Length: 179
Image (cartoon, rainbow, N blue to C red):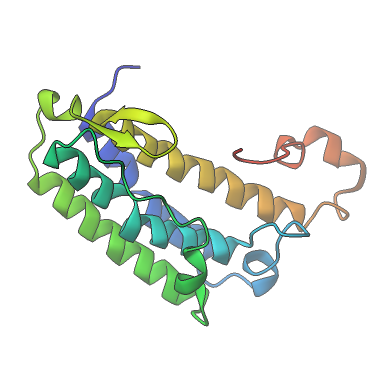
């Protein structure tokens, strides 16, 4: 599949609604329980998505468009979601995510990016040189990664209850979502 910005945007604009439809109104056992240890709950994942909206995608896109390949992006604070989660309820987190995503996509559309813009480059603090197109494609893949993670977290809550069927349920075979 070739990369088309509008295809990416069409996925990005649907993520808040998909999460809202799946999660709003569920009992907390589905949304505030994790997979054990230091793993994240569903509400923590939503807080992380909010943090990324404010500190990652569009700030990095603006950095790339400024055109300075020598200056790295600021490092991403991997614990920044803690501030967003705070004492917020899941409905509050879902609302903030939808608001922040709509704002980010509005800004992205206003840029009226060209194919040449998507080739513009900047320095990532870990990965080295990256393009704007790669960043924007990663934004969509990041959403899908966390949708998968949310499914896995929720399925974990039924692990013992499904008994021997666990071996047929791929979501329960997955060991994680990233490095």
